[in-house]
Image 1 (cartoon, rainbow over the protein chains, first blue to last red):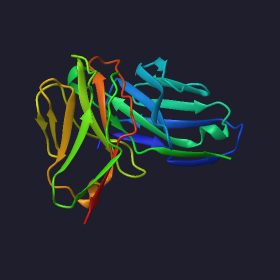
Image 2 (cartoon, chains in turn brown, blue; image 1 turned 30 degrees about the vertical axis):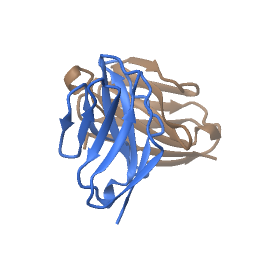
Image 3 (cartoon, rainbow over the protein chains, first blue to last red; image 1 turned 180 degrees about the vertical axis):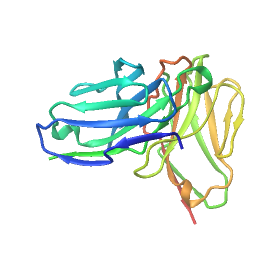
Image 4 (cartoon, rainbow over the protein chains, first blue to last red; image 1 turned 90 degrees about the vertical axis):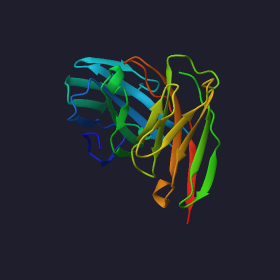
Length: 114
Length: 111
């Protein structure tokens, strides 16, 4: 298994509260991603990072921000959680070069916004 | 990224080979074919990928047609634990390219 740890694995929060999900990797990979998965939509990319302090938006980035202050950690923040952000969130990593370009996923973080 | 077309579902008997088809008729020369699977409530699991040659690893074989417009993932001896959603994805080379997931195919392995 790729060395990816997501925390928390499960969280219930109230509408309007801030939430931060953490992705930690031990592979020293350059690329890190956050996806969400919802019934009927499959996995959709929220944000990704291609290096420390280098991030970019994915297809469903509204309402989310990210930060990457060191190689091993990629944080996803919901500044003010809404019920539409109830979802399963997956972190993924990739080496980024041709030989290590495969993307590996973590086990997911289940977020419920009530 | 080019899009792929997969059947919605299929089943096979335990111990038999499972052949999962995928069409990617608009694939470009620099795009790889990737296969992932997702077992209920778990993160997507990488299976295999290839460019134009057939590939085999400990999990599966990937057969890509000569024109690269379609491929088949083969699980040689399916087990009940192989029941999952399987995603066929085409993805360009280059570090900035991302995975775009479709709906995948649900494989049910029956005893």
